[in-house]
Length: 346
Picture 1 (cartoon, rainbow, N blue to C red):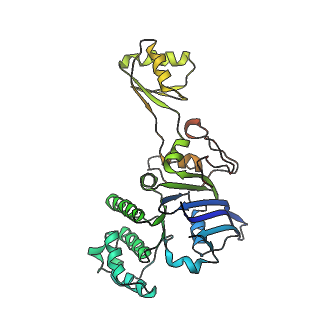
Picture 2: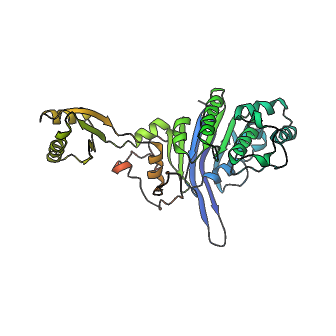
């Protein structure tokens, strides 16, 4: 499959009175044609620096970047017509209508005006196109920003937090739009704090922390690499739970006992666990793997932690230098030569 985006060994250090701050430390990222590719990282991880460098807004210290096979930033004028992007919060003239805004952008880019209605239809703003932008909610402004990025009908679409301000219905519509664009051959690089949506929408992900790639690959393989190795065990007779716990203790098997089931760790062969209990006349009614989601993998990899009482989201990158990832509940995934998960693609 053809690579639309290639980043190898990207480095960037910001220098100020407070001293140098390394934003990118040999970062790699590869995106294949037609993918919806999730780009994840905590605040301060180097994610925005990467996107701004790709778009020629800042210059890297070293490293190699290619978009559509052409060297960046040297060939950026040749590929910019094929790239649509939203990075950080978009700004529009409040007294312009949304339709005037997109019409002006089409004129500036020598694009056909027919694309204005097409873009509004795609982002769900067709009925509100004649309203002034200053009357728009945050979510509507995000939709307008996505519409503006789509006017070129780009081959590569880069979206930084496109779901910001959207309600659940809007998020679902954004998800459906991504699927439509991908099915039409467009490649989408999507950065979002809503990790559950990334897990649903994206084919592949790249996770960055402290300027380095810490995991990359198909979503399913990233999740498999960080599997907990745990199973949930429920018994036909709930009264047998304590007896089952004693059997596992005697066998040296680690577990956690809940009110109506056991969570057993380090299980390579669940069938053997079932046989062990059956030999003691303890019969299993449920034996299922404990799943891991992208949110928990991200939080473990980057060293971030959920805020008690709030939905877990991407927070500041706090994982110290040299910290290794132990995986959910002590699982250690195989490491590749670059130090990220073995599913990472080079």
